Amino acid sequence: MTTRSRASWASCLLLGCLFCCCAVRDSRAHPSPGRGGILAWAHCPRCALEVGLGTTYFPPHWTDGVATPIFLEIDRSRWEIGGYRFLTNQFLKEPDFPPSTISARPFCGFTAMHRWLILHRARWRLYLGFGAAYQTPADLLDATQWNFAYLLALRYSLDKHLFFEFSARHWSNAWIKLPNRGQDLLLMSIGFN
Image 1 (cartoon, rainbow, N blue to C red):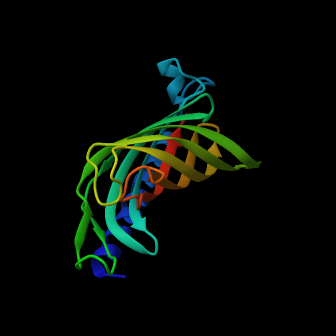
Image 2 (image 1 turned 90 degrees about the vertical axis):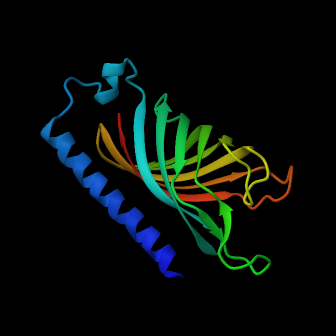
């Protein structure tokens, strides 16, 4: 693992932990009034807002990308609309390419997907998701701007209105056009409902 990939992963982890600690402290200092939670004020009592931080990879190596997503979950997390900002270049480390080949430059992406709750135990939930993704430029990872989006997410609820989620996400054009390496993300996020 290169120094650059270790630094990007460590900075993602540090910023994610710092953000989560601040959010937990603020939610305890200013509890939301009534039974509906934060988003009940926006007339969406069955919605959740989720913000996070993550990194990109292409099996079996890290591609050194840093991503910041924001999600709106609707109907008790059955539907998700997401916006992403990829903040750094991603590097492809394959023998067919020269070292430090840029596979994707910073860009914006968007997803819309259906989520299925497949396991619920006490405070833990496991989700699968499937939908569509759009990215502003095509690149060496995906030759198309429109792609399929997949999700596997593990959620831990701190209380009725605050949760943490760790998710693995993949965008791919299903071999409609080559190259089709796909965009892979690991994200940590905190959600409010």
